Length: 260
Length: 275
Image (cartoon, chains in turn red, cyan):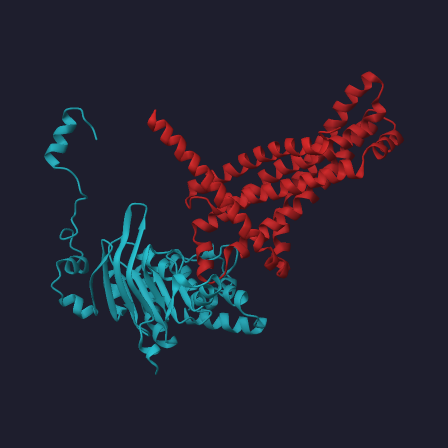
């Protein structure tokens, strides 16, 4: 019993220690952002590898999610003779929820895991330590540009996801199932609100972008510098980011739409 | 010459460092003289690499002081520590080359990070450094295309890119074939003398290291157990120094890891008590 209590206490302390290290690292990363802005080339390079290279998976997933929404939405709405509202259903679902959330989950799998593995391997092969000894701060040189790139890329990817999804819904709803084209777009236009829906969706995607990049970078930087340690850290990145995004999504949704 | 120039470049006093309950250094005093090649030798696991990281300010000792060029490393602000690090190079055992850059860019890295030199001058400097280690022709290769010895030589070219006052070598000869070992041995001595450097070589390759060093410290069990010029150590009557320098399997450092009585251990297994 005492042993069990001791283990519980130890893992509790370990958890809070990691949490503390994570927050300290976030502080240093953010403090390093001004030096990234001066060296624009580094940032562009990272936006390319974090954002641009994630485009394909975001485009394809967005299209299919939109098509499924069009199909499912039509099947439900047609029972009530309300298939004209398909545009509204598709757009609101994407902009408010699926755009930011699914993009963040895909981002964790595509870019987050790559970030963790890259940083973890740089640590394991002493590249970060080597930089430190060359008087180059690895946090400013390696971590801050990647963090800022994730922060900038996530909202853009989420916006692209939603836009492509709306087109997917259009292809299925209007193209295949015969919903009126004018109704699809005009209903969408009249019921999607800039502040209520779009801004809140963007806020969500920014928050997810910060969380996903932070977790990925911290896991890489904090990884045990062995091949097993890096592989575990990569797994943890995907699992923790997914859980954090879904949990935060509920909290943000409750704050944004809870009083309706 | 001022008295500052005669003082040792690195002065370590009463150094204590432990990881958890494992004591790595227990009151170590060391002096590294300017312009000399000083070797720090000892069996694996005596914290030789840790010592280099302590000198470079990457680790913090529990007590004791480390002065480099008159400055106490662990009392410096971050900016001053980084300024000091620009004047010292550390050659990692793995080379620690940046894997996303080729040989040329790896050597150019510290120049690009710390200077605003025009591209043509960076090119000249990089080629000069690569020429010094004999790898000017390998400038387009990626780190994965290099052999272990070549990677270490590129790392050496990178370490001297900013013309430091001191270079620390972490196990430079480990895992090298006789030819690349010979190349590295020559390079360390030649660069030290040609560039007026101070070199610290951490190693357990006795013959190679003794051949190029001016002074040797022997570390074991967290303490300095012997020191002197290679000739002095060879003549020393310390049993420990003799065992280490001649590579004898048994002596003050026992062949057997501490264990209970052999016969009793075997009999215990027969009664079904394993472990």
